[in-house]
Image (tube, rainbow, N blue to C red; front, side, top):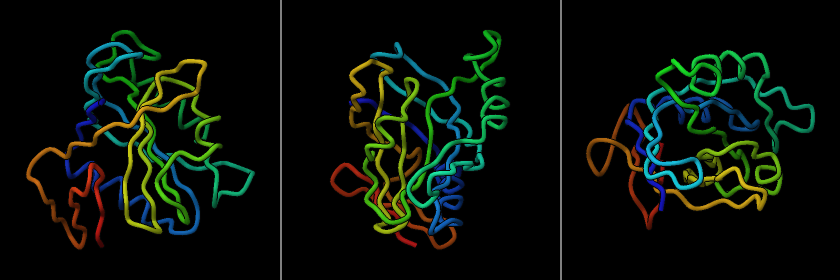
Amino acid sequence: MICVDVSFPILNEMLDYAKSSPKLEICGALLGKRTGSFEEPEELKILDFVPMANVSEHGKSVHYIPDPNELLNVLKRTTHYDNKATLDLVGIFHNHPNNAPRPSITDINGAGYAGVYIIYSNKTGELSAQYYDGGEQMGFKQAYVMVTGIQTYVSRETTVEPNNGELVING
């Protein structure tokens, strides 16, 4: 299983952004470091979260498309665009306002590059992570999210607790 390492402050920033939009999907880029290959990464370390506007014209309550200009600006900071950059684009974060945090058919069909796709459910308070290897089979593999620090994390009114391999967000 692929391990995704994120600090609590970054995770909290992601959750705050998702909670700010309880009815519409949001999205953001996850920047960091990757060890291993795109097809078989060993670990992904998230070092920065960059919120991006959702410009979908197909029902933002169930679909997201990152603003292309914002995405290009993010890519310019990464090894995808500049081989002297120190950060990789390691994934995308988005929310499901009314559904479980599982990749939808739209998510699966829209996956365009190798990386982790982290989904937060506003409805259930759960967080999940899947890794897409960029292959033509459009398959996702479950990823394990490890929050750097202690076992239970509390900040403001949010508690993050491990629960059967997933993180449950309370607050």
